Image (tube, rainbow, N blue to C red; front, side, top):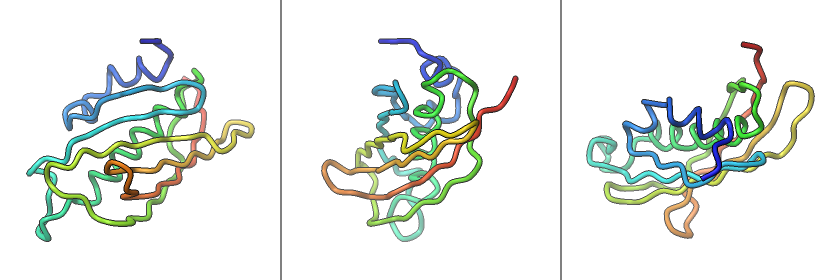
Length: 130
């Protein structure tokens, strides 16, 4: 496993790892993660709470934009929920860099259940100095 900045960031990401998110790959402005929807992630409608789907997409976005090296954070993001997920579903998120300009970037993340799209997420990033 290549250890670029995204892998190091994920190793320190207690929140994402505590939810069972797995890093599949991250390099060159792309990332793939996976998460199983647990019973604790289900809302009163017996579907996955949108916040957990957003968190999966946001984590994948963070990994993609940090795969280049400089510390990068979210400047904003939005999500469109296409369909719902249920307890037991395994969700996979694929992030791809659309563009980087100056210290900013735009990334798209698609969340899938097998081949079915669950959500589309767009994140805007900003490189910060540390």
